Length: 171
View 1 (cartoon, one colour):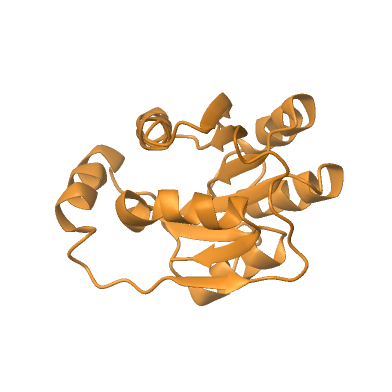
View 2 (tube, one colour):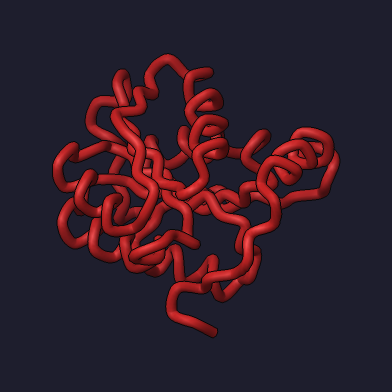
């Protein structure tokens, strides 16, 4: 399996329509794991978020979803892994929502670098990848959460709340 777990991406606009039609009807199991090593975000009344994805329409969807929670403030966007690391270091967000299949530097490698530079920042992967090996690699890179893009409508805000409170979340 390639290091960055890159796959071909189906037409996202069509996929976004399918998500809204099927995501809550499809069976999905999510697990919230408590972690003694994780700490809650120190100021949960205001959470600064960096969204990283190479597809503009998806970034906009995530922004709109996060705006449903008034404590979440998106500070910026990045469209590739190198830009994600640079912006994370510059902005020091509390939470980073990160795709795996990114140009330049894959999300898993970006997460490893961000984790070394900013150990207090929380990372949640938002990905189409469903392989257990990929999910495990993502969590091993230092992420506290993993949400399937097809489950984002139902699980994104729950994942954010879990990670903010110091828990892990896997949809």
